Length: 199
Image 1 (cartoon, one colour):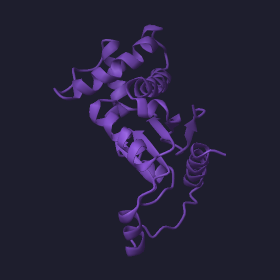
Image 2 (cartoon, one colour):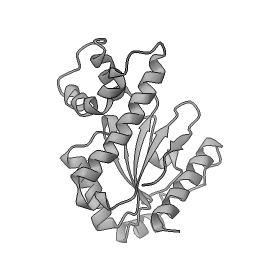
Image 3 (spheres, one colour):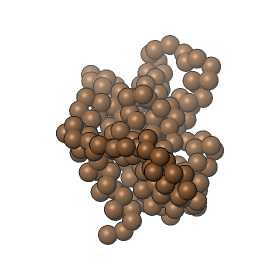
Image 4 (cartoon, one colour):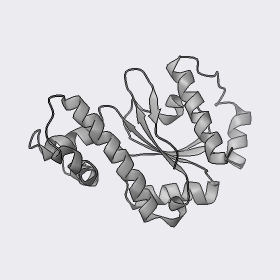
């Protein structure tokens, strides 16, 4: 089993514990743990996730202090700072796996889809820059036509955005192009993460 496969299994097992409400008791605040991670952090994976307060990767995957290298930004969009942060995780910390974590009912995706459909209100000034980065990922899904089930449309758009984000990371960075990545989708109501296959 490769390091990336081992990390993937640890994340899957951690999410299963989270869903079943059997998370591990942790003493992350202990001096011993703080000292250990201060000297030599060894995160098992990098997670690019949304800034949404309902989707904290450490909790969702039942991991502790120093276990994950987490980059969070609205809509898990990619800009130079995000790209550089993930390159840092791979190049400096030798992280074996990058997870792109989308989630149910994502506000950034919803606002982008609504804008493409001519619905909703114009975003606040800087919010528009986030939606501009989401738009190319979801435009094709919206172009396929409206649906009676708006929530299903948002789900499809979010999953398309996660896939497009992985493609953007691979195309934009030689470090990341060589790193196994996996798409993930968090369900708000039951805590379950649906994973794609690591690639």
